[in-house]
Amino acid sequence: MKVLRITAGAAESFGRVFVLYGEPALLVIGIIVVVTAVIAPFFGDNSPLHAMHAQLCHQIEERCFAVDGTPMALCTRCLGGHLAFVLAWGLTAIFAARKRALVRAGIFLATAGLMDVIFHTIGLYDTGNVYRFISGALLGFGIGIPTFVFARSIRKSALNETSSA
Image (cartoon, rainbow, N blue to C red):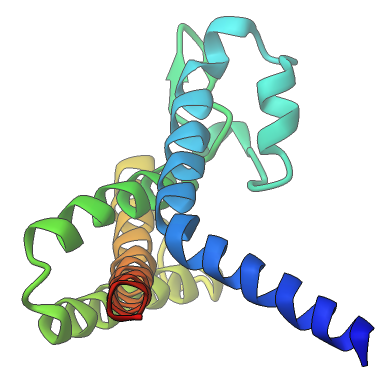
């Protein structure tokens, strides 16, 4: 019985920490991913930053933006997606009162981006890097907007619960 109480207490503490700091943590991780991907070409082709981002992206050179011929650590679609995910935080902060409209917009944007990926994958058309970047941005906004709306709602609810207790 005592073990169950300790486990439940630890889970509750972890949940509270996640609720309070999950949103900022997602934002910081997103910023780190984008910044390190953009600066990676300055450290060469085989930099540790490229190796780190290989876990997130295929890094096909022809599909990456390059600096002096050295590709960034994320392909254009992944870069657009991660950057838009970070920018989605700002949108959800600015338009916080319009949660439903934001979530609807996010679903629409994600659907548009996903359709582009599917059409490209099945060979309906081939796109260039700028178009891939835009497609990734649509997906990034589409995933980021609902994620941050949800995280912010949970955090606000938890803070209200704490202040009323």
